Amino acid sequence: MINPKNMGKMMKQAHQMQKKMGEVQQKLSELEITGVASDGLVKVIMDGKQKVIDIKIDSSLLNEEIDMLEDLILTAVNHAVIKSHELAEKHMNDVTGNLLGNIKLPGM
Image 1: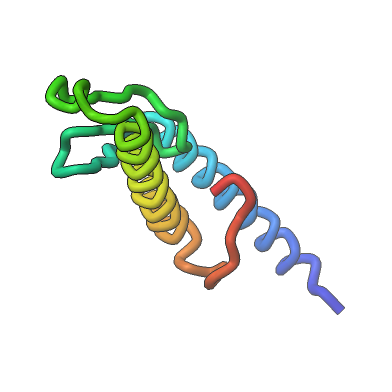
Image 2: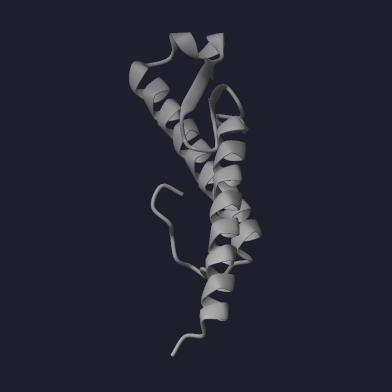
């Protein structure tokens, strides 16, 4: 049987964690993460929620085949997504104290 005092304490802790997670979500949306390809000739900038903010392509690549340029853009996007996921996971672990272990939260 659950002690009502413990239940109240658990609810308060859950509410505090939910508030902190909301703060982390806000912080993630304000971050800028850069993914790069070909030693920085292609850069993709996204926020911590994986929204692409900007793409930079060095003008020296404009004479290249379109297939190569597309591949470099994909590489830079994927690099930024990986970095963003790692950063989001770190921020969430800071809030949860890694309470969730390796459980992945939807949207994180």
